[in-house]
Image 1 (cartoon, rainbow, N blue to C red):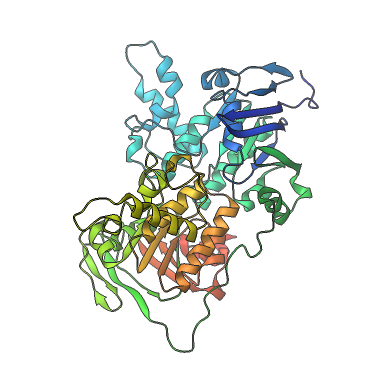
Image 2 (image 1 turned 120 degrees about the horizontal axis):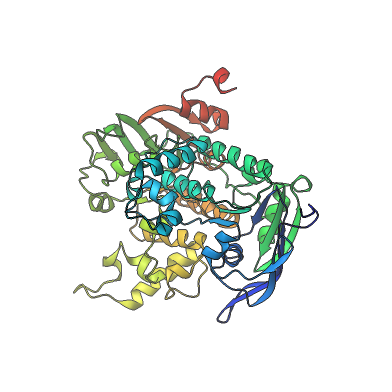
Length: 508
C-alpha cells in the first residue's frame, strides 16, 4: 500500500511546442488521492494541452509523468484508460448515430467479440449509471436526438463507468442546470471519498470555491500559482489567472431615464405548439434583458421562435411598433433581429474558415461588388474593423477560426452578427466555456451595444451573470413566463424560486 504522502499523479517540468508556438513551459502539477484539484487559467493558458498530455493524446517534449510513484509514458487514450485515467472533454465527443447506452459503454462494445449484443442488459446498466446523476435519459435513444445538456451528461456517465483512479473533467457543468450540476457534485464527492483524484477545469468561481480542495493556475503555458482553496479568494485567483485586476467585472447597469424608454421589441402571446406556450414580453431600448430558467424550460426555443428558426403557431413580434412577418431566419435578419446559438462549435462559427470569412458570412452584400463578386479587401477591412471593436485577439483576420481560443471564437460569432447591423441581438449562453477575462470583456461589449441603442437579450444558465449583467430578467418555466424581476429584486433564490415553482419553505 503506497503512502498518502506520495502524490497520486505528478507532472514534472512538462514542456510542449507546436511548431514555433510554445504551449507549455516547464509545468509542475501534482494531484493527491481523494482530492478535487481545480486547474485554472484563461483560454489558451495551456490547460487543454496539459490534460491531453495526461491522456496520451500528445507527448511532452520534455518532463516526466509520475503515476503512483512510478514514471510512465502514456501512449494514447486507450493506454491512459488502462492506467486508470479518464478524461471528459469540454467539446462533446460522442457517436451521434449510436444509442446512449452504446456510447456509455463504447469501449466495451468495441472490444466485444460476440456476434450479438445483449441490449437489454446494456440499457439496464446504462440506466443505473445515469440514475447516479439523477437522470432518466432513455438508454436506447440516439445521442444526436438529445439536447446539448443531455449529451454532456452522457459524456460524464461514460467516464463514470471507467475503473479510474484519476478523473479529469473539462468544463463539465457548462451545459448543465443547477439541479444537474448539484447531482454531479454529489457523485464527485463520493468518488473523492473513495480515494479517486479529480482534476476539475472550470471558469466558474462559485464551483471552484464550493467543491475544490486546491487550485493550480496556468498562465501563458507556465504554472504560476498553487494553493489550498481555503487560502485563496476569488479576486486573488482571478488576478493570478489574468495577471491583472479586472476592475469592474460587470459593467454599470442602465439608468432609467426620466421619460419612459421606447419599446424596441414587443412579443405578444407567442407559441410554437410544442415548447413555447403564449409568452409575452417587451425589450426596451438601452437595456440588457435576461432570460433565465432551468434547462429544458423553453428559453432557447423562445428565442428561436422569435427569430424564425422555429415556426410560430400564434402570436406577434413587433419591432419599433411595427408587426413583422417572420417565416424563416432570413426574414428576421432582414428586419434586424439576429440570434447567437448556444452551440458555438456547431452553429456559431465555421471553424475551418478564416476569421474574415466568418465575420462576412451573414452580410455578403457588405463585401461584394455591384455585380455580386466578393471583394477580399472589403472582407478584410470589415473583419479588422469589427475585430478591433471587440478586442479580438488573433494572428490576423486570415487565420482559421479553429486556431482561436474559445473566448475569441465567441467574439467572432458576435462580430458575425454585428456585420448584419442588427437592431436586436438574442444571445444564447454568450459566455459559455470562455475564461473569466474574456467573459468580462463580452459583458462590457454587450452593455456597450445596449448603450448604442441595440436591443440585447441574454439567455444564461449562470444566475450570477443574469444578476450582474441584466437590467431585468424574465423567468421561463415549462414553456411559460413564470415571472419578471427588476434589477433590485434579482437574487439567486428569487430566480430559482420562479424557475422551479417552489416556495421559499420548499427550497430550504
